[in-house]
Image 1 (cartoon, helix red, strand yellow):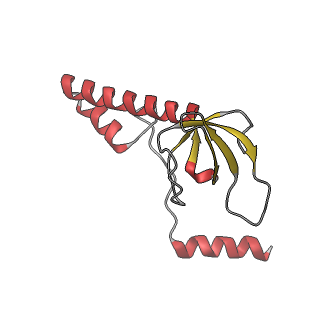
Image 2: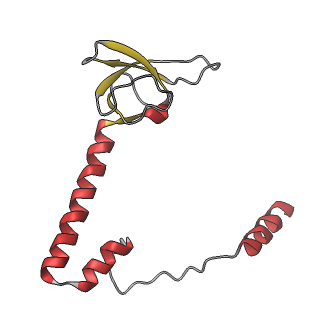
Length: 126
């Protein structure tokens, strides 16, 4: 749950309320009524309005800035790998491997659905 007064950015308008997507606002209250879909009341200074919004329509500004920085860093690494013709770096970035040491491989096997259900059944039986 987000705190009061935090700066947020509207990322979606799932209920078609004409929210200013991409605009910023501040959380001014929680909607504690369990009978409706709204989670927060947001003040958007640019529009000089209050909006009732679900949690899925807003995101913290800090989180979005962090995601944008990660995306820019990834693009810069791809450009560097292409410019230096570093095929290993390019493949590691494109495949999404995040391990710092390239010699480490994952030893975990992927379980089949039947094995997974069997394990859950055994644990539930105990």
